[in-house]
Length: 249
Image (cartoon, rainbow, N blue to C red):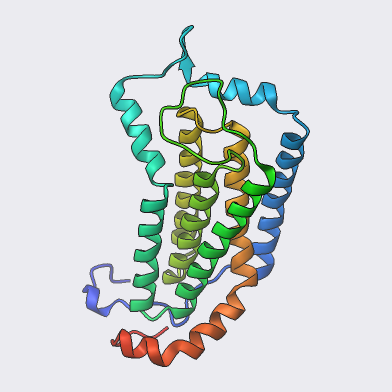
């Protein structure tokens, strides 16, 4: 195999890979089960010791001073910003635009639908549970609204896992696809940890958020693909006119 071919000769897969609905739903069910278990424990007020220990783990001394230097604190704040409204939505818009430009219209539509519906689900759960923010340690970042589940954890998992599943369609290699998905899982897990480090969420908030967001990305992949395909096919003439080119998808 020639690994030195000019970029102009590299072609995308004819249709692209997609996780099968059955596998997506099985993985989603595992995540939803974990999410439901945490909700039950939180509503029963049975995670107090675990949550306190998790928040105090990142602090030292009688004054609960955060680990490390001011530079480390700034780095954690930068990392947590990856799960904030601005950056995660900016990356989502870039990914959707890129998918449209290379004619993966179904994947672009599915990604947009996954993100919008995930935000609705997260908001509804927050309003139903209504858990206050922790006050055990000082907050090292601005945070408002209810605490459960962590919006950063839930929505970043939806966005970055959704992007990973969409971009995986660009590769015919299983190793490359799993690397994208594993990378998204790692990034979003570290975003979740950063929320506890900053003192603005309980550990149970971020674990539930990560599980719920991942579950939603997988559920949407299984259940929303067909309507996304129908919408993309119906809108194809307008999209073709707006994004002319030679690639097809």
